[in-house]
Amino acid sequence: MPPADAKIKELKEKARLIRETVIRMLTTAGSGHTAGSLGMADIFAAFYFHILKHDPKNPEWEERDRLILSNGHICPALYAAMAHSGYFPVEECLTLCKFGSRLQGHPERLRLPGIETTSGPLGEGLSQAAGMALALRMGICRTLGVEHACQTPSVRHEKRIYCVMSDGEQDEGNTWEAVMFAGKNKLSNLTAIIDRNGIQIDGMTEEVMPLEPLADKYRAFNWNVLEVDGNDISAFVVAVDEAKASEKPTLIIAHTIPGKGVQEIENDYHWHGKVPTKEECERFIKYLNI
Amino acid sequence: MINPDAKLNAKVFADDIEKTPVRNGFGTGIVEAGKADPRVVVLCADLAESTRAESFKKIFPERFIEMGVAEQNMATVAAGMAAAGKIPFITSYAVFSPGRNYEQIRTTIALNKMSVKICGMHAGVSVGADGATHQMLEDIGMMRTLPGMAVIVPCDAEEARKAVIVAAKTDGPVYIRFGRSATPVFTTSETPFQIGKSLTLWDSNPSAGGPKVAILSTGSLSYAALAAANELSKNGVESIVLHISTIKPLDEEAVLNAAKRAGRIVTVEEHQVAGGFGSAIAEFLSETYPVPIKRIGVLDQFGQSGSPEELLAHYGLDALHIADTIRAFVLI
Image 1 (cartoon, each protein chain N blue to C red):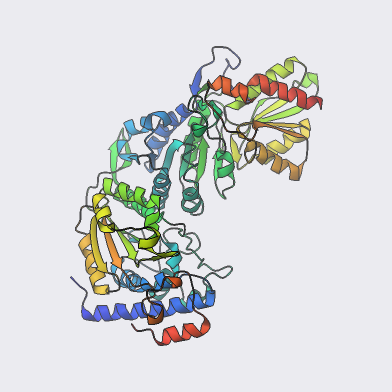
Image 2 (spheres, each protein chain N blue to C red; image 1 turned 90 degrees about the vertical axis):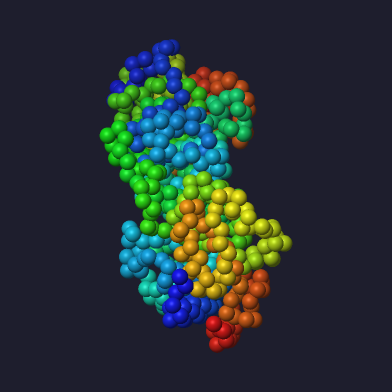
């Protein structure tokens, strides 16, 4: 079921807030990744204000869903979503990359409560998400008189694991080892999202290292695959719901527009690792067209 | 003379002392650790028999996770499992783990301070027939430079058993290094073992004056070091032998004390002399109590095929060569 119109309107406003914060953070930091952070603002709004079962005041809550950001370089969007949902004060976002800040240039688990794992080096998030999914699925069995965890799920686990990846990091061998592992173990409590924005540092993904047919590749590895417009919050929420019914791990290929919301930089791969100047910052925010 | 407090095997210098691969201690220790704590899980990269992980698999099949030949995934899945409350032991040959998956260990295990226990088997030239590709000689250096990583190199199967049990009870990341070939089991269940504590195997005979040299060794070569000390003693060269199973955190007090007593240090390891155990000792003593140091280990070379005995002799790592090197060093 798609969320009600009022909910969608609220989530769109959250996404706009995330974008505005992302632009200010990156401008102040003078370093970071703009295109991917803006492109994923809708999905982070959907997660932090609708999908995730979480408690910003109790980040270690045992019953929480976990969101693992594998491509740590788009952390400004994650930080902004966390701040706006109450994990820490929004003003703290402007400390991004500064000495002593909890908001490291790439996210670190031990520095900021609510960060599920340290990331930045690519291709490692899906494995960790799969490890969490497997561990949380393990029940308690009794062998030789001692209690121990077992891999046989007694009930479908309610806690879900989400892993956000980039398309560029599909180049990493470690990613495919994880894809194989999750397929083998039928990790149905795992949903991965690929930000399919088509760009990476050196250019377009299909020129740097072609990924297509990406959906077929995951299906061949025993995954359930869905494709959506990643900037359509309603469609994304429906896909996340649909994933819960699958007995396989699910991949949502989210087609996003890099730089989404700032028309003059949309789809320009030069903005992968570039940040706005002060003038651009004000202009971008003024004309945020979402 | 042998330190009685070490409670060594009574047959320590006998020809018929039992010989067992150090990795067998993983097989026995991990079953005990698994019985003691339901959170212990074992991840295996298609080497269940040779790492001895199969002994855990037989008893706790639900907690045995077969990863296939994928060491990078093994390290990162383990990090995720630890984040969700498990105590994962990851097992493979040391060349592959921590060799191949070093960056995964650095980022997802060490930087996250995850309680993952990295068990590197088939370390050193004594792997034998498989040759240089499978003889890991750089792992101690790789692991001891990672912040927060404990590094343990047991001297025999019995100490390896204890190390595995203690590692499961220790918070945070731990690297344990195991050898492949059969080596003397010269410690006993009574021999003390504690992370961060060294073990005095041999001390100079008080009636023969003070020690001329302190031999600091790690891993199964501690047996060769002990045998060398016994030989040297017969030639009037008195020594101390300290087996240092935990390279990090280092038993600094014992190392300093040995340096002060003997004034001359020899280190022994089945690893490159660059970056390994001897380097750790040299780094510490050069800043605290500089004394002449001779590092015995592999000298900037790769290994090769051969029998373990041939290879240890070729690289100067058997008792005979160790004794010769020490003799020449104390005469300087």
